[in-house]
Image (cartoon, rainbow, N blue to C red):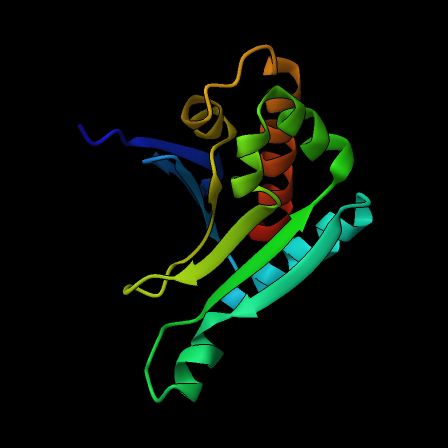
Length: 150
């Protein structure tokens, strides 16, 4: 069954939609894909996170002679947070480091999407890691807000 959660954060008008679906959380952005990715990268670095790489999928598609709406992937992490998750179950390392996908939909809306830590916990049957999972969930929500809000 398709699970859909739509939350609207309003400041005068509706400014940002948050959608959770199939283990992904997507946050609407007020900026372009590039600007959102730049803002995310700056927020991550300001908090001491390592940004491992940034992949411009649209540029890759263009090199292959294909068309793709703006789509960038930012891969980032911090061993102080990731290691405790891997100590619960090393298989979660397949989903680490964290990733954020910034993409433009067919209507021109820009989104920042990332894996829901609760979904990853379920996928890997993590036990006893609620404290670190909550910390990760809060950090991802904060980074997303900084990258997408005005």
